[in-house]
Length: 35
Image (cartoon, rainbow, N blue to C red; front, side, top):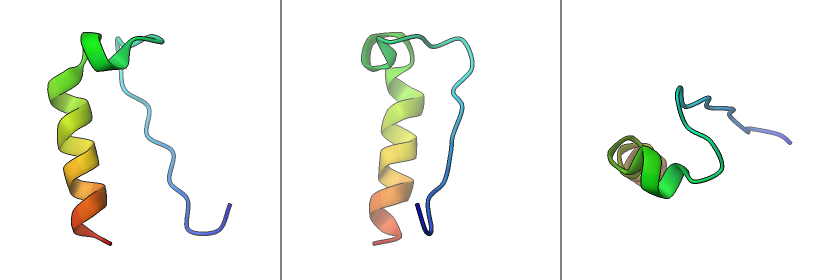
């Protein structure tokens, strides 16, 4: 996918929303700011 980016979040499984919610929120904020 052109302009795509893969981010691997350590120590997270399928429930990243519960396991690493603070890091996920930060990554989403960074993504939205670039739009």
